[in-house]
Length: 160
Image 1 (cartoon, rainbow, N blue to C red):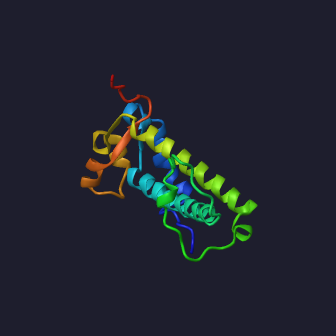
Image 2 (cartoon, rainbow, N blue to C red):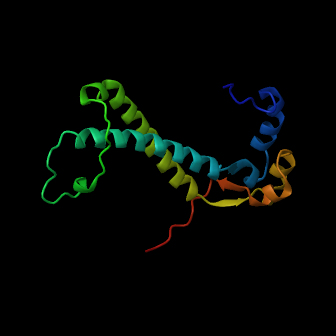
Image 3 (cartoon, rainbow, N blue to C red):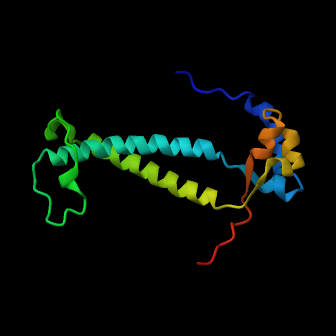
């Protein structure tokens, strides 16, 4: 599969980026797209990757036929066992553990980043005339629905 190519070269993008980075408006200077759906999609892919490894680990653990503890807080007595499993010697490897660590790290970081991003103050792209004039790739409706992050302001903290 070929990598996704930008619609414009970096040098063609430069004038718009320069204008947005040197504007006098705080909205233009400090407003960035949050890519909510794309972040959520990334989280789902990461979640599926971790779940695949998690399933393998549980199945390997269940295949050991170790009796669950009397409290069975993990619910191991109720776990469904797969009929066919690779042997523990084949499946448990340095590569599996490295893949597990990397996947969990990416998943955890993405969750934390998404939580941080979603708690930031936002405004509609349409509220920023300068940013709208620089965007030719989205419709008026999309400009209204696109939320920009105001990175210089924190979301208000709600008291409990």
